[in-house]
Length: 431
Image (cartoon, rainbow, N blue to C red; front, side, top):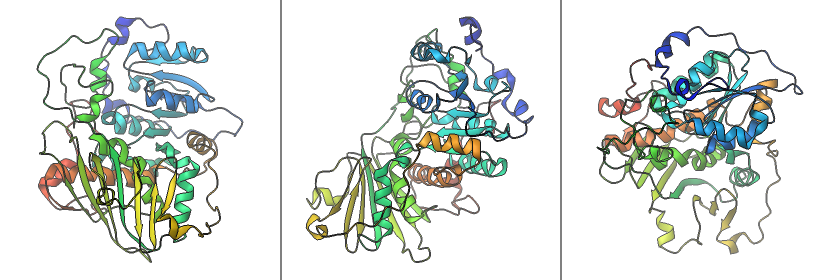
């Protein structure tokens, strides 16, 4: 929506633009900028995590803002008057036709991630996309492939990767502080479950373009049970608590032990609902041995589930986080802290030197990469494998089977399970 565009024009559906048609006419990659020169950044979705990401990049030149809710656009410009000159849009596809954009920040619901990310990269734009990188495994593989081919700067929004605490934990684990680790537990509280699809059809709020919010998902009538946040509990839009939080927490294990794709995955939870994600879930990821590293069994828990060690009173009270079990001790970690356990066994332990440099900031890493071609720590090659692993947890859960994963061919070898590697797209939104 260009600045000053009226409400009627904002709400007009623009699906006729044809995703597959215009995106094929891609521009050449943007030339590198000097460190002192500001990037021209476009931001897709500007509330919630979208606003947090906007704050992370607004010291650059914000030339475009996009959101399907007119109130969100008005609100963010009111809060940050320096954004008044940015062009405003309801449709990110129209936004990408703006010629001066260098880089794009994408914080939409999961079901739009791949479409907006691929379109931007095919136009030669650098991309920062929220976690999980995509809504489906097949999309994740496409995003990784295109990022590699386009050679643009990429970063997935696992912001906690940049904090010092994670760096110190990785150093401890890689230095062998707790010995050889074969078992990892990762857990968070809570869950998202949509339940049965609502049958009533309340009116669409006048400030919302519902058709654009639905985007590539199969169309359904508007209902407040789907947005602004509860979309995470519906398979058409999200992947439950696993898709929401596992990329943040499992990132620590993937980083410390150079994990990429699991060999087998199995999951348990409440009976599978055809439309709604599980309120609780346990997922077992089995990674093969590699080099000097032994096989690793990582278990994810959400809802009211936790590792048995807590019920057995073998561990101190600990909120969401990770437990690394080694043959010389254990290590508990979360976003803000970590603890070697049992404490008495480590009272004289001398920590390894700090070898992982302090981050310049998660968003700043990406901005520097856009300008100078320097690597980012959560580029799509690294974070794509993490996101793919997480999404495979839901493939195993929905199929009701222990699945094997062929990361080269991109298949489980089981047709019933493979159907959950991809999803249905609304006509005109095919990838």
